[in-house]
Image 1: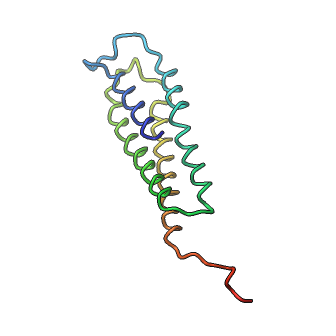
Image 2 (image 1 turned 60 degrees about the horizontal axis):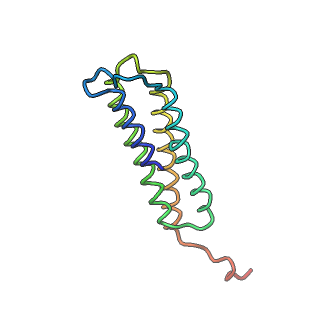
Image 3 (image 1 turned 90 degrees about the horizontal axis):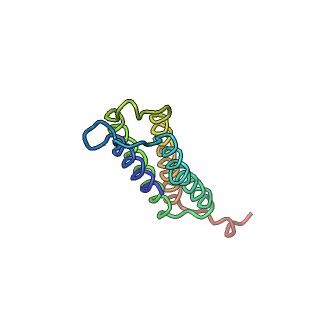
Length: 135
């Protein structure tokens, strides 16, 4: 989901730049498309990462930690790429919140990355077997 969100947001921003840097040349509702992209792939990617983290608090696995770390890195990197495209967009297509969404998902990507690092660290610790202890 993180890869899909990054691909959608960077391609949408590139579309708004247009082939000659003057915009797409057709009518576009940037606010509607931005809301749609965020609700279809952005928010679900963070929700799935949180759900995955929640399920793995009891059963630690390295694979889940690596997936969360990769998703966090993808979100952070993709949002920085979109930030580089944003100044090239014609002012007529800039709407309120275009830059805010990037910052929100950078913070979300950092959170997902931290959750992954926490799980990775937790999975490397030796487990205690409380059943074998004698009181």
